[in-house]
Amino acid sequence: MPAWILRTSVLFTCYLTWTSFAQNNPLTDFCRRWGHQSAVVDRKLYIDGGLVNYKPFGSSTADPFLLYNDLNSVSRGMPPLYANLSKNETIPDVDGGILWEDSVNKRLYLYGGEYHKATPPDFNLYSYDILNNYWVSFGPPTGAQSINTASYGAGVSVPSLGEAYYYGGLLSNASIPDWNGPPRATNSLIQYTMDSNSWSNLTGPDEVPRAEGAMMFIPIGDAGMLVYFGGSQDLHGNGTLTPQPLNEIFLYDVANAKWYTQKTSGNTPDIRRRFCGGATWADDQSSYNIYIYGGFGFPPNTTGYDDVYILTIPSFQWIRGPYPPHSNVSGPFPKNMMSCNVVDHAQMLVIGGTFSNDTKYSCDVPNIYGTHNMNLGEQDKDKAIWASYQPNLTTYVVPTDIITAVGGHNSGGATMTTPISGFDAPDLSVIMTRKAASGTRTPTRSIGVSTTTPNPPPPSSSSPTPPPGPSLSSGAIAGIVVGSCVALILALLGGWFFIRRRKDHHRRDSAAAPLPPPMGEMPVAYQYDPSVQMQNGWSGTQVSSPTMTTVSYERQQSLQPAGPPVELAGEGESPYEYRGMSPMSGKFELGGGQGVTSSN
Image 1 (cartoon, rainbow, N blue to C red):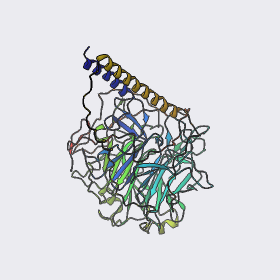
Image 2: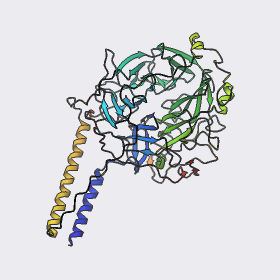
Image 3: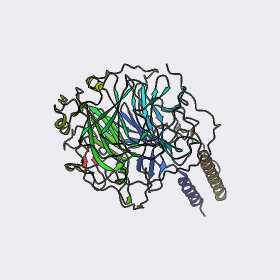
Image 4: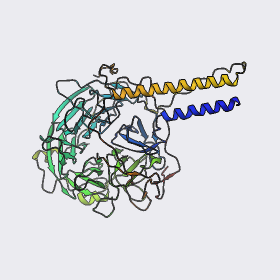
């Protein structure tokens, strides 16, 4: 047999073996994601963890990547996605947690979440250093108060104050080691102070444990206010979850550490959980407007919702949003466990999520990686709320639906500034007239380095080509190739078994991660049909939501041990160096729908 044929055959066998062990590419193999954490710092929207399905459709897996959307660019109508940030296997891959952003010190903090089919380790706070592209551990919570890791609660970061909050959430054997019994909710409000790396376990608005709701920050009052609503409540503390009505809003006055409760009026959304939302406000802050999308339902409507609602404050009115248009019923594609991030007060990017009423496994617009955009002021050519992303849109205008409810004009001037039935607490009538001053917090470290996109390391320089030596026989060539191939296969198998062992055995005596410098769901089974992608795409003339994708996964309560995160990536090194973006066709194409021409 000619030597080149022998070499080719053996190398092809090696290639097939290698591809069977290869890591899924988070861009080219993407099908859908949900339950992830996301945050915006400067002009990047970071997406961490969650659950993901790859093409061809397979079982749900924990997503090991830290990704980001470049908010300065547009590709196929959405900000392009990149996957070249550092995150190795020692960093937790969780769903239902939160990324607290610190835009002052250029960090992300990963708190909470569930380990997918794995036993969680003891809690350590991990932080991604945006400037240097690596992770560090801030260690376990310090202080006398006990801090548990919850999942699917509600949280928010306030970088101007250097504070982050997390209210409620589920405690279970997927988030806490050695947990016994069924999952149950908590009523704690956790506060994390970034500059001192300190924790406080505060009380909630009452004794009722809650989970699966949403929390936003608005700059009202002396130092701002946290606004919580929706989700579920655990009235008996035994894990039996019942709906938390959305006509009851819980408010936390940050300056005075005091809770208030306020009833709403208007078109109240149906009970829901695991929805997402974001807050923006008029230029004169005469109205603060919280947009929510979707959510999972409760019996008898467990399917959930495909709709948009707006809570406007301080009149505390619920307004039915412009989707579905001219309708008071849900759209056809209910969605939950997505993330929402407001960008420059004017747009809200809705990332991922699951659909619960599909009868087939469908991907979530793979060519834009499940990214969808809400134009909060409907400032696009079609005056639609679902629209192409505009990187230069930095001003929010109050849309007609809100002006109709509160008066004024598109830059503010609201005339209805109290609830129809008055404030439930007298203090609120005063607090709601105050505007929180912008924070004066300064960085606690040097941030002179710009947050540029890290690139893969350049290839090393080529060595001079040596002079040709004596040729080898076909047998020698085959022996060398086969030996190399066997060595490669053994190395891959050894690495695979090592990783599996780390994931299947919780080693509490592992080395600790380096500390930073001191600082001053429902199981569903459907049949997969690969021919089904997205239906009813967005068009330039018809308003429609992110279109159909269905997800199925199992949350197992009997979990197997897994290795704890111990060693962090250093020197900017990342085991995942995929880099790419969505195709640049100039068209925003969703499945079979009509294209919308990109603004860029």
